Length: 363
Image 1 (tube, one colour):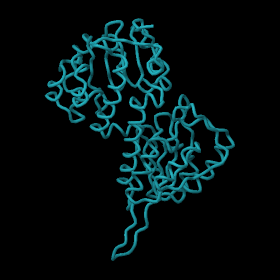
Image 2 (cartoon, helix red, strand yellow):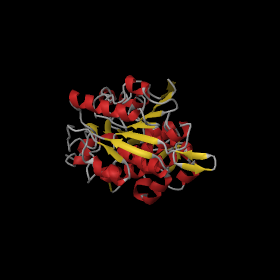
Image 3 (spheres, one colour):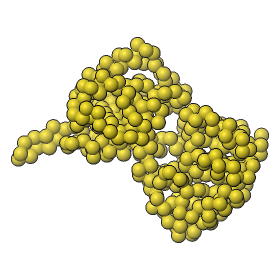
Image 4 (cartoon, one colour):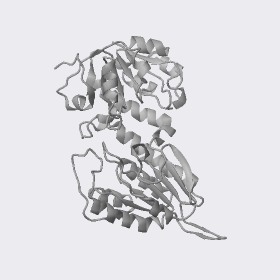
């Protein structure tokens, strides 16, 4: 059996790092890496050669029984794989419903890493949380770079500077990391979330919790928010609008799995924001929490900088790759026993992440 890791075509991350492979020689012995796969993340071929095979892209595509990428392969490259090959990637079938048919067309099997159940048992494999944490951190640094003023309070001989006001909408993994980072930079931070359970976490990080009564909750939503009633969303928008007018930075993270992200910042709210303010929309890939968000774009509207980017983790490729690699290795250890594939579809983690059933499963 050969496990193949490919270089990403439009992403600086790499799925497996030399450090992770070194810690797991039983997997490394069966691994081949495309030459140059880790260069953009700071891992050269020499580091891989010490623990795994370094080969061409064609050799990975033709020789691997398991092919791993951060992002899905293009259709034309899937066509080069041997039928029965297993793909492991972030397929996001909720956002890309056609992907399963595409994989089936080429007679391949597939596990989607973003579909791993977000349970305590699978916590060490939770790539979504790992990437979200980096995105939340990077969002604050990006906002600080764009903001035309300090984050912390400053008292100088030339006068006092008040601290920046930061509003975080959505207190999941990304939101909580954004809160912690903004607090460390000295900002005054408020945060809102429809989940009541987030209140204590927000307050424990030193931020003020913006509470709007009447939210629906679902403990089985896997860390995602759930769709809210029209009445609640109207109350939420009114409260957010009041606070947004005072905010220097707003970071939005609210997503509902399988649905368009809720609009939390309509144009009317952005119209009331101060010139020089910054909006970072981490929900851009699913439509955006800001009505004016443009996916993968940064632009100014009435003096407000709006950044729509759900892939900020890619901008910290070295640590993002390390975390991704560790999560991935913990998942691979479920699939590989004694150097061979052993896929037990009765395992809830394996079953939950399998988006195209495999003929060679053990059940």
